[in-house]
Every structure is written in C-alpha cells, then in structure tokens.
View 1 (cartoon, rainbow, N blue to C red):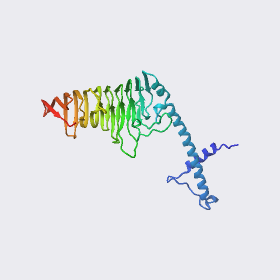
View 2: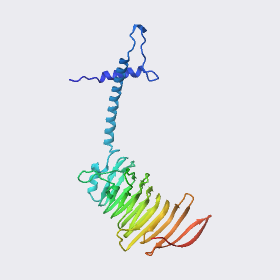
View 3: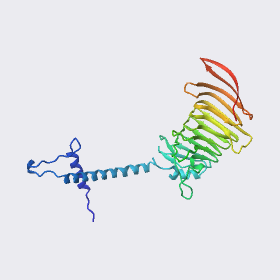
View 4: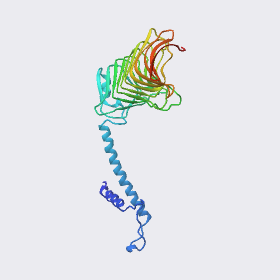
Length: 346
C-alpha cells in the first residue's frame, strides 16, 4: 500500500521557499540560540532533497500538460505523414489539405502523383522542415546514397498547389558532399502562392528542380539560398512563370541539358514584377536548347551589391548556343536601347 506524500511535499516546498535567504541559502540555528540545537548538515541536505523532489514533481505535471496541448494542436515535432488528415489527403486526387498549426513539421521526401492542394489554415503560418523518412519496409532512408531521399517534396504526376507555407531546407551533415533538392518536378505541374523556400546551410541545394516537361508557376513568393532558385534540365516543353516574387541565391534560373539529351526541347520563362539578387541572374552555360525569356519590370542585381540593372527583355536563344537579347536599362536617369549578341560556352 502506497503512502500519499503529495501534501507533505507541498508543505516542505512551501517551508523552504518562504525561509530561503536572498543569497539562495537557508539559515542555520546557532548553539544556545533559544535553547535550540545547532542545525546539522544532514538536515539541511535532507530538506534540499525534499525541495528538489517537490519541484521536479511540479515540473513533470507542467510538462504533461504542455505535451498534451501540442498533441491536440498538431504542433511542432510531428511529421505530416503521421498526421491522419494529411496521409489520407495523399491518397485522394483533388483533395485540399489545410494545415491548422504552425509546426515545424518534418517533410520526409514525400512523392505526389495526383492533383493536390496543401494550404495554410486561417491564421496559421505552417513551417515545413526537411526530415529523413523511412522506406516501405521500415528501414531509415540513407540520403548519402539515395538521391530521392535528398528531396522534401517530389511531383511525378498531376498538379501540386502550395499556398501560404514556409519551407526550410536544412539538410543534415554527411560524410561527403551531395546535391540536395527542396522541391522536384519530375512530371506534372507545380503552383506556389505566398510561399517562402529557404536554405541557409550552403548545402548546394536546388530550391526547385524541374526534370520533365511541365509548368511551374510562382507568385508572391520568396526563394532564398541554395545553388539555384530554379534549376531546369531542358526536355520537351517546359514553362516557368514568376510573378511578384524575390529570388536571393547563387543562380536565379539555371538551365542545363537533360541526360540523356532529349529533343526537341523548349524552355519558356516569363517573369514580371520580381527581383532577382544572384551572382548570375540566368545561367545557361551548360544548355544548348532553345530558351525564350519574356521579362517585364524585373529588377536584377548580380555579381556584386553595387551592380544593378533593370531589365525589360525578350531573349531568344537558338540551338547553336547564341543568345539575342533586346533590353532597355536606365543609365544616369535616361533610358537607352541596346541590342546584344552573346555566345556562351557549351
């Protein structure tokens, strides 16, 4: 039969809390003071032990309450795949998953193969972080060896719509350097509205990687960090539209030939009312496909903080690797027209 010591411990806690000195110690009774015996060290240590147990009990109760609240609110530390509403949404085409919580939530390289919308619930700003998941047999994924384990979200079919979300791509440290990808389009389409996509660890991350024909639309969004905001392996018809967004990365939009090469390939870029801060606004050094750029009211700042140009351009690149660019840029307050022919190494 157990003994209930809750009341006793509460009295001990109250006694020691009220008699504690300002310096954190407790008073000793001197010999002969009011005929009392002097305080002994053993009694002091016993009291401190009781006080410690009482405080630990209180902290344990508070921890249980706080953990239960986080579970009810589906808050931090959970993976979206473990959430029933999210896992069921992955199984139904055309479903809308509304995330009612701020997170952060772990994204363990999820594959999307149907039309799906993931959006923030009213008043929430969900944060998604890269997480290492598990294979079907329960084994932990190995991103050092598996390329697909180095991706947060992968679209292979259908249209994935993301709205009001924050993605933080912070991969773990590995024994060797490997390329990472935040969002990969291997088929289907990707639509982003009011989304931030960031990476601060300099892990050579392609923030958005496009490997197959399809459409990518980015609006009112921020992409910061990584080796490229958008990296495209040219194959078939690929359309990318960027509106009212900001890119802050090494390469704004990079294009390279698909391996193995597939022809014909045509990449259409349409940018409007956006800002690109990058070492290279456009990086096409490894691309021989046709690239068409329609740019309207786009501010590009490249190479250094002091180098800046406003670009209103239509760029045409043919299969020979030649870029013909017509643009207007303000110089000393005036607008000048120019025509350039640029041949880059392939």
